[in-house]
Image (cartoon, rainbow, N blue to C red; front, side, top):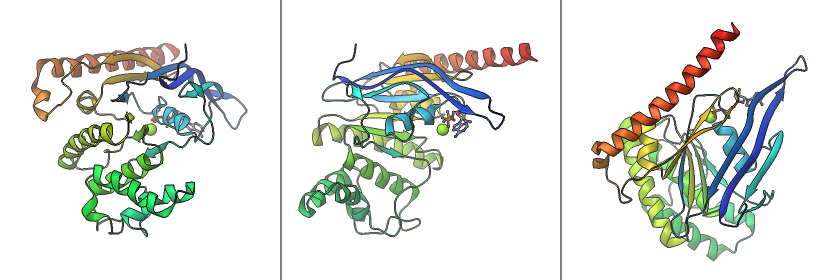
Length: 278
Ligand SMILES: Nc1ncnc2c1ncn2[C@@H]1O[C@H](COP(=O)(O)OP(=O)(O)O)[C@@H](O)[C@H]1O
Ligand SMILES: [Mg+2]
């Protein structure tokens, strides 16, 4: 049943592409996903799965950048409306380097026609939430800002146009390990601050890193390939105000191994199919 508490619902999705010889290649089939709102908190959804299983495609459906060949995409219990704006943060830095941090963040509001004073106040709230207030007047370009800071500009830009939903496609994939670990804590802190700025933000976060998913996620979905669809859902029951110490907690370690085993058994099945097909 669809209720307005359902933030994202993907129903019976198929995705195929026509090859040059006219044949169809089916990449997603029978994909169903329901992400329900948790008032005052939001969800932190992590999507894991082998390359090519359709993780980015799922985000593109939600962002409105692509429509499935078949099936329904619902946002807030209604068919996705082209006017629904949902921001996305990519692995590559995606801000405008010729604009300052503040101008990057206010741009989305300017396009929406929000008055100047209001757009500055709103933008500054998200710039502060992302700990960028000291950098608001700097150009959003490397090396004036570091990789981690530029990803925070992208997060602030996304949030200002739709604070309830944030899509992130391997956002920390290009960062060095230290920056990546710091960004994980930073993102959890930003998410918590958002509970006070707006009601709640639901984050859908694609990663290849299992410990990262367990550390950040409230729920993890594992996708499979051939055809791409959701294979497993794991609800993560770990303390909310986490620190990195939780990574040594036996429950954390157990989640990592359970997920690794599930992913390996999916890829073994795939390998067995390939061998059978010859
Ligand atoms: N425009 C396209 N034409 C043909 N195949 C595509 C196109 N876009 C995506 N695909 C295929 O769809 C599948 C899912 O892609 P994607 O969502 O990018 O996977 P992931 O993000 O999980 O690595 C891949 O097999 C990819 O090759
Ligand atoms: Mg991808």
